[in-house]
Every structure is written in structure tokens, then in C-alpha cells.
Image 1 (cartoon, rainbow, N blue to C red):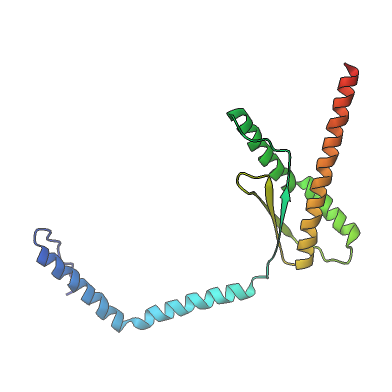
Image 2: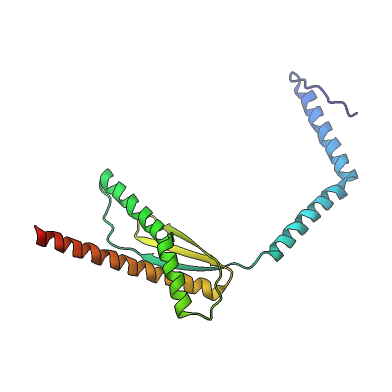
Length: 176
């Protein structure tokens, strides 16, 4: 009874009989060993419940930021410039400079708030200049304050670099 039935592809009735014979065998096996399936399912659900109850709560703070002065893409050179703009903005926002500035601002402005690790996620809404910024952390107020500080420091940094480039342009024109 446990010997495999050789496949005979020429007769459809024999193939159907073999299929239903196997199904009957699996059905009787399930009737005899149903408890193995239920025990395995119970262990898996219990393990996942335990893992979920022991993991810390993660708070999410979301924001949208419009980073302007993007040009409409009309040719391949402009498309490459547009990709550079998006990549540069993402890396600058998630980079050490902005994050260290934000942590320093929080350390000085909110000394009573406990410091907790926060991870940032930055994405771009397609065909717009809107960046979606998402912060995840274990302490809700710190996560929200950190996201706000990062956005403020990013905007301050952009103003500083624009001011420097404007001054350099004026000096270059004056030198000419």
C-alpha cells in the first residue's frame, strides 16, 4: 500500500483513479495525525505572539516637506540633473551633518527628554517636489522632536549654502 504507483499517462481513467487514490490516502493520514498539524500551528502562533509582545513599541512620526526650485524635465541632461537633485537631497537629509545638528539642538533645547535611537526614511512623491520624511523610534515625543529638528536643520543648511553660493557669485562677478 505504501509503494508508489507508477505513472501511466496513456489512460485518463487510470490517471484519475491514481489521483483520487492519493487524495484518499492524504485524507486518511490527516484524520489519523490531525493533532500534529494543530500542535505545529499552535507552536508557531505562540512563538509569534511571544515575539510580538516582547518587541518594543515603535512610534512613527511623519512629515512632508516641499523642496522647491526643481525644473521640469524635458531632456536627458535635465533628467540626470533631476535625479542628482533627488539623490543629493535624500543623502543630505539622512546624512551625519543634519542628524548631528538635530541631536545637538535637541540636547540644548530639550535637556529633560531622554535620548532614544531614531531611524529616518525619506521618499519622494512621484512627479513632485514633495519629500515624505518618516521617523521611527521607541520614545514618541523624542521621535517627533527629532523629526522636527532634522527638518529645521535641513532648511537652515540649505539657506547657508545658498547664501554662500550667492556671495561667491557676487565676488566672482566683482573680480571680473
